[in-house]
Image (cartoon, rainbow, N blue to C red; front, side):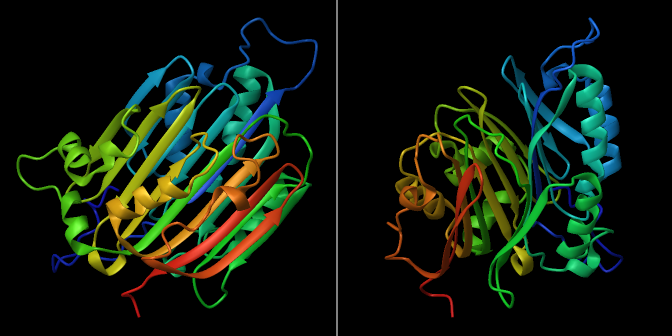
Length: 340
């Protein structure tokens, strides 16, 4: 996270909202017969300069990128963006205005790919300081109101505790997804200060050093990593996996509002041992976890793919299971045993 502009005249770091807004859109060809010759059914055909313009509306920019034939991955000043053939992912933190990206990316997908929206997911954890967000992000109700102006089949949900950690989701109520797909997201707060020391930008260290020293490099050793260490602190990484798979990690290390997000669409039959590895690296005090799985995902139902093998260290607060038209979702929150 770019914290360079977050210091006031007293050199006190003001609040930085590490909690991200996450947008994932799946596209498909419009099916019209009069397709111009210039159209390519691939989102990666959208020119980079047009993506830069789109990010300007969200108030973030590209700081690093790694591209290959099946996936383009961008580290942003506030989190990440991914483009595969038919999937667009944008994840932004701070006071970015992520929803400003939806109409522009739909227009770009139509112009360069003759694509229309097939499915959409917008989600986020509750903010630490929602009053600092820009319109319409100050409340989920406002976000839903805006999204409903764009989609006539939207469905909004809240999971978790109203007076505690909760997670919001807006998706489309359709039956138009039949390919294997899964997304694991682990949102961590109350981080161990000793672990967070890794992500301070001290003299002579760079992103690659931090990736290795922190243990992040060992989580998925076969992925191609693109990392960035911010000034004066903060860390982001994108990892490219086979078959347009990805992993992305974002870290706000400041003690008063420390936050780590881990997200991947890697295929596994059972995610439990892998989750344990992630929690071991970061040692969070509190965890919000979600696993989406389509009906044809390798893991089958998300409920069976998240066994609680880490319960010797964490106690569960909540666990909820939801079934949508094409996906099921397991949501859970945990607190480390030594946290009151």
